[in-house]
Length: 143
Image 1 (cartoon, rainbow, N blue to C red):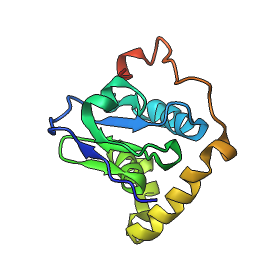
Image 2 (cartoon, rainbow, N blue to C red):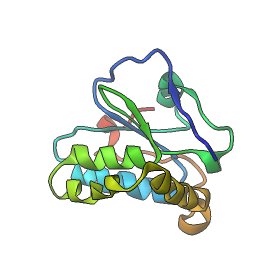
Image 3 (cartoon, rainbow, N blue to C red):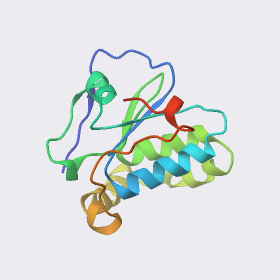
């Protein structure tokens, strides 16, 4: 499973954006953790199924089992394990420690990432619809 997301005419987002599978239990749990940890309101969040993803991402695998978290910041686009590590690094503090696995070869990290990604619905559940942001979350979630 080779994923390659590309960005339509890259425009620097006002805030870094984390694109995630809006119906995936694991992905939503990750977003919950990042949302609570992001005390500086660095990140914005958008489901891969949403309009913002269509605006920024020109290519996306047709099979949802092959979708990856995608992170776009002011400099680049990241996916799979690179996206996760860049997000943790950007959070700073304790979270940087978790990004220590960046020393592992990307191929190995992405193999583990894909193994979990392929089985994420079975292991962590799947929602019927995309996440609906709470009042507290609305200002940081993009359509």
